[in-house]
Image (cartoon, rainbow over all chains, first blue to last red; front, side, top):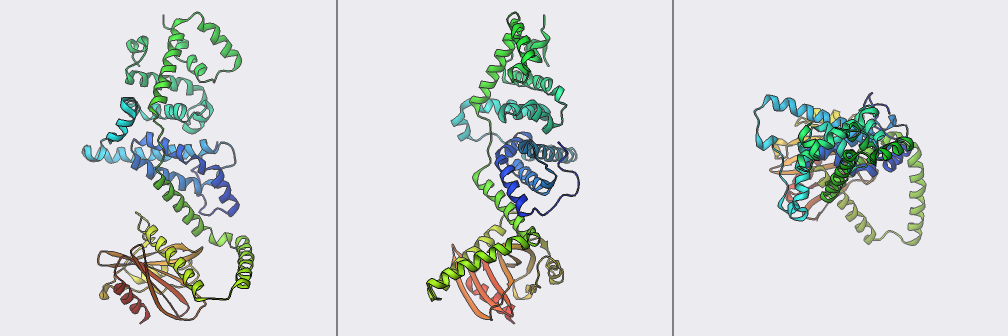
Length: 188
Length: 251
């Protein structure tokens, strides 16, 4: 898969491409939002990133020559999110840490009431993972991506998807407190 | 003691990513390795924890709607010139056909004109509401009519009459392109105290017309035609305010 965000792109899709875009890309809006939501850990940021990614996808749709549209879109979403994280990290370095700005939004009472503790615990554990681990968990467990798709979305070599997943899952198991004894004693 | 496969291969097996040969090999390994069996169990339980928690986050219906609307406006705005050839021909045929049928059925009645105007006004109010969403109000932000007016050059095929009425209490804030009723229009943005006034302008071949006013969902609109231009001003400011703005434009 070629890098979808190189080159100048096009502001204009002809009507045929427009229909193609709508049939191929738009069904994956939720997938795009979900990935952004977990990478950025905030709904508001995820909305901005999803919007930016979708406009980028629109502009660079001429560069998409068939294949897996979901993986193509998620690759753009991922790049957008990492750029975002990068920018925020720099801004954070320059300003003092401020909980108002940088703190994670806690789940609403309604959400907790509906899902009980399971949802909250998993959410906190997921948020605590490094982004590179979080994204493979989200792609594999939430999105059901194959190793090949994960490789193309994250630019991890296909040969190391399995070991990355292995490390990510172990860390998640430990964060959830239900790691197997061996993993608990050996650490990560 | 530690089995290497419990770290890696068990994941490939669990995820159905091993080819048939390696999967079969791993299965026979499982029969004699309690560590891998435990690792497999742990993976099963992790997956069920995730499934129970349902962490998948969908976008809210309101945001989805906004996203699609943005894309639609963008598509309609930017692809107007390149699509003109193919699409307008069909549109013209369809429009002519519809007109023929419609004209055959009934001659112009006052009723029909009214409903058409109400429809147009509601589209204008929709466009006004859309413009009030964050980041949508202006494409060119300037209080200077000599900045705003040239900005429209090459973006629309007419020259909208951009004028600043700061002294009269309607400061020019900027302009943007919008799409109303399938046509690209110029939208001029004015302030009126705390209110925002959108003035939509596009060329018309119909003769000048005195202002008509109305209100939809609490928004006032005023519509007039002058020197080949159709004007629609819409705002949550008062009706007299809009009439004053209309007079300023007509002077």
